[in-house]
Image (cartoon, rainbow, N blue to C red; front, side, top):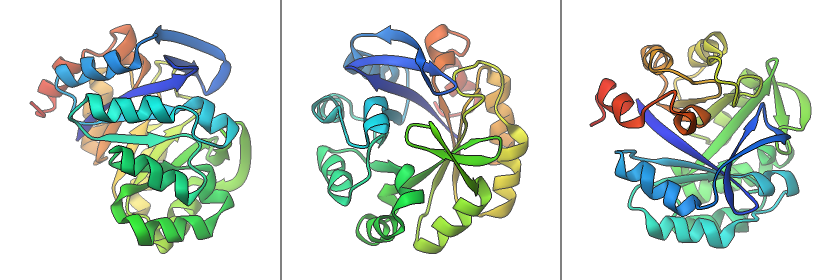
Length: 239
């Protein structure tokens, strides 16, 4: 199982939100490039980048910063936030980003998902961001009536090969992942699932690995020191 450090970008800074609430922001660094290099130096094999401004506005807002980050580290990046046009997906992949994450577009533009999968294959990830079991969009601010499992099934039929599952109520809380929901999702699909939200201890990471997720995205816990990245990587046999 991969342990994937998260770098959330807002107004050019590295921040973390509490339950996706833009009014509850903690700034952890004003140098996101330095943060990316730091996680790489500790052994991370992949980074998860989110353009929070892009997620809110519906278009990529940190293009130049993302491009610089892709040039500054040697490990693969996956990027989400504001990718709601095919041109935007193509743009970030040309920057050197390995995977483009689509969330709101999966609900609002099925044709885009289908074409993106046809053109870019496994470079496309769909993010399943759920609150109380129902998918939320537009930077987690708008709730839909579609369940996480329903979205996975419909996206798989379009050619999506990988998903990120985030329980919004757990994200940034340092509580624990929604293990039950993750297990349910894994039971409904054979496609790779990356878990996110509430991961705050080595015990959580080990349990996720036992459930069979492909990766675990860790944010606040790395920045607060609740999880030591190097120790976690060694414990799970990644280095």
